[in-house]
Length: 317
Length: 291
Image (cartoon, rainbow over all chains, first blue to last red; front, side, top):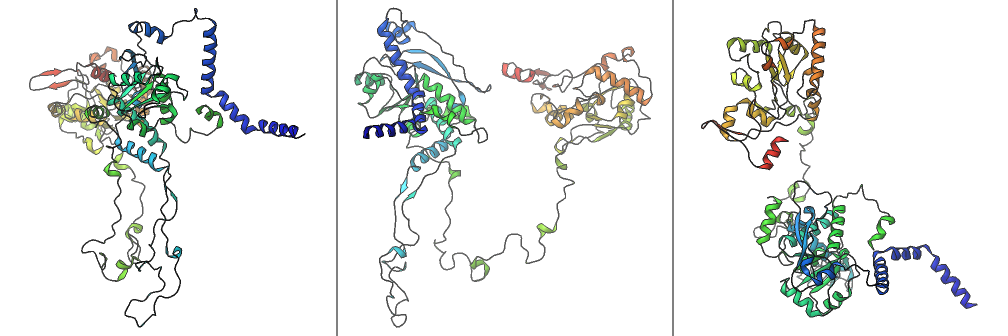
């Protein structure tokens, strides 16, 4: 009897629209799709190995020089008076630096005016929007003090006064002091945030601290491999690896777990502070595509053209 | 500073990190002056008693009760923007005939705005928003030479008088930079600047210059021919056949819409002392001047 009622309750809960929507989000999310794809490929691989075409990575392992590709990317809405920037396409599959090709990068994202004040505003915002000021000083009314007159109005040689909480007394209250937990939250205008990302990327590109990589797959999960790679390429003391999804290859996650200064991030976590904190920035090709698409979209968007709807937002998970 | 120049500078500067980013000095707000410094005690710079010390001064523009100046004088919208409008200082047909008779202008050559300015009897001031010549009707009865003339504004009557005598009139637009070159070519060539590319007329003038009735330079030549016939019928004169005249080559002379001087192309630099012309070689310049 009790079990039946429990099943009924859980049944009704599972049918509720909010939970259904969340499940629908998860199923359609790209993370889930990627898991499905990997599972599918593993099944196929276990089935027939002979018919499979060697992947780019496998071809490259056999002979690095047999994979010369010059990927000319198509840039969206490129200004005809500005030349696109060019960057090497590198790999993490060997310790030595082998170039796989050359890419075009959009000038409106990777060659924006190098404005330090926009970066300053972004950094300040990232610091302050989470801040809560807990300082609190008692005012006159908060002091635990008796309300009586301290001395007679006349007769003593002293100034006239009332109770001890007065600001003129040494032990009195502080006037207009900080009051209570105060949130310093504010939202920086969207264009500042978008341009902040673009300027950070432009600075990284201009100062040769940006590297583009085909994917974050490495042959071993040995931390020494990654350390040697970064040392031979002089990528510095800290590096930020950016992939397009939050589902990363296994080897790199285990390898980089040993190092606190080498970090991996999905595209949706990209922010100005992290880009400037780490000395080098390494983007995967898929990440570059996604970053360009998003930043171009938002830099030309205004309040008229943007209208919130759940249909347009679900794919950001 | 251009973006490209700035990015080139940034390449050689130290790595941008969290410890070397500052806000721009223009964005920093000045703190409110509390007037507690040396010499600012007691009255804090406010004087003694009265409205000045007690923060009860009246509003700006107040004149102790009577109607203040800024409310006395009403606004006059009639002349609003008059100093910004295009002006075409007039030149009558009478003066034009006189200039031809005195020998200042040669009727065997195309009469251009520059040839009229160089006579010295007509002045154009580009900084006063003068955009060219307005050929007026005064002296239409006395006008008696067939000429090929290029002006910026002409009425129906002037067009009729010139065409009746077997001449050709065209209306053409020049932008101010081109006019600076046209009104005094010698001084312009001495500056060493290249001949400018003439720009197209603004939106409110495009209609006039593409109208065949005013013989605009952007109008269809076939429609201009039709309008010539129509005008001759309206004013009641026989339209002379220009193909039989001696000066046919002269009357057919036209300038490209981007060209300012006859025989000279935009982008060229004229050196009068050495009697040479310098032409641009670079591809981007040629692309710009040919567009």
